[in-house]
Image (cartoon, rainbow, N blue to C red):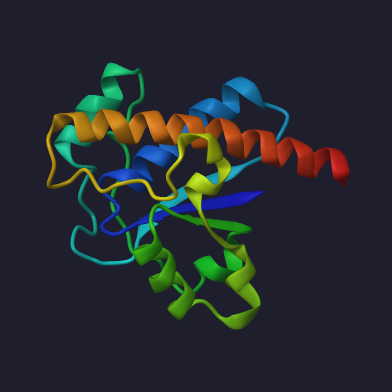
Length: 158
């Protein structure tokens, strides 16, 4: 299963989701073979590392984002990934506009896998305070566990 996480600039939410989901999957579902990546719908930060505040918040929880560099969603991503998870509706809409018709069923909101959190979008912490980055981590950890459970159900059904 190949999964792509997507936000606007690929420096806050989607790289966090990439690293957190990878950690959760390796700890809770090492038997599920996964390829995980992240990208942005806008090219504002291509080649840059994740935002300093994102890296710091993640590091406090034991996640290392230092090796990641921002990139933009490319046309081949719609062919290469089985599931493309947007952090919010704006980015989901951007993906829907770019995706070929046969790939649109691969597009979803990440928080669909965490209905218990009571919201559908991971808020962008970029212009907020430091607690925003912690809140994003909470949401992403919850959705990561939900996504693992979804993948387990799919595996059992197959």
